[in-house]
Amino acid sequence: MTDYDAVVVGGRVAGAATALLLARAGLRVVVVERGRQGSDTVSTHAFMRAGVLQLSRWGLLDSIERAGTPPVRRTVFHHPGLEPVTVTIRPRGGVDALYAPRRFVLDEILLDSALEAGAEALRATVTEVLQGDDGRVVGVRLIRPDGSGRTLRARHVIGADGIASVVARQVGAEVLRRGRHASAVLYRYHDALPTDGYEWFYAPGTGAGLIPTNGGQTCTFVGTTPLRMREARRSGAEEAFATLLREAGRSLADRTLEARPVGRLHGWAGHPGFLRRVHGPGWALVGDAGYYKDPITTHGMTDALRDAQLLADAVVAAASGRTHERMAMARYQSIRDRLSHRLFEATEAVAAYDWDTPTIQRLLREVSASMSDELDHLNGLLDPSAAAPAARS
Image (cartoon, rainbow, N blue to C red; front, side, top):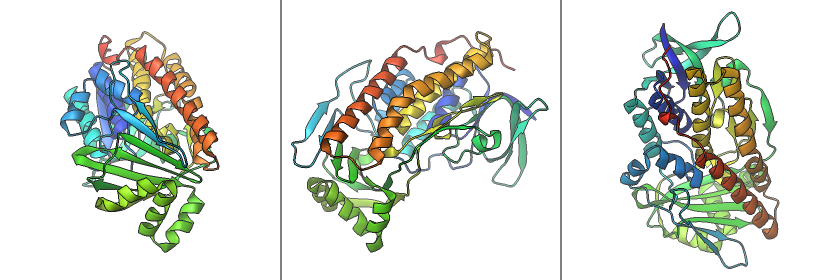
């Protein structure tokens, strides 16, 4: 039996970021991740401004750049029959470029930084969330790759284990809101595919994008409704990819299909968005475990870093005695909900794929406005690592 201030279940972007902030604040933290460190995962992996702000604030942006992640200084929007609209990334809040690191790059940087700050890491699968006689979560039971078991006790158990979160399921986290729409996506990486920053394409029933990333590669994705994707895939995934690219934009299809593909074609069948209750006695959720929205607005990683910051603030405030735990966690929930509402609504509407050009342009303005609200809030926050270390349990 080992005591920690926090057990973080899941060592990807949300979990590793949360562990990093808690460890920097002086808490004793262990990250339990069942996957292999440095492995890739399905992800659009494009950061928006608020995500880059967090990486910069935490001192990690240099590592992202040294890993060969290219800076993105403009975003181009393509609509059928209209000239492309280019938006330059203007310096604001210490951010003068966007970045889209591959997940095996980003997740490893975050987890390594957490370990450097004093967090521990275990490769294991959590099998049970433990509760005391009073119903408070007090730890987890896990099994390691060699088959051995272990029990970890903690003041806080944090579920950062994705959409199908074991922590959320076992604590009975209530779903506060459910989405109705979902994107089915195909994507692939290409060498020498020219792109002018982030490029987004919106045509009737289809959305697509080009995302420059590490190693001189570009991620090309195309999304549509699950029904339309199933119809397109009757001729095979490769033919569906080409067909949907052409529907999204002829210039997109021409550039992509002429470039050299790297690796296989990846797919995502889609999942409706949701917001879960993110706290209870002894437990909390962060990242996709607590809040998932469709990837068509490419905002998942940005919100994961945002919520890692909000949750870390709450846990540190409670551990230091500055704020009662219930009040601190309720504040985390309240801010998360307020900052998520507008973007969740706009993303739902985009993922319906039933818009015309004027409608999608209005929805994209809603997405942009919600990002500004998020950035304004984060700019006013104090990094938990600047707080006085909390007493260890």
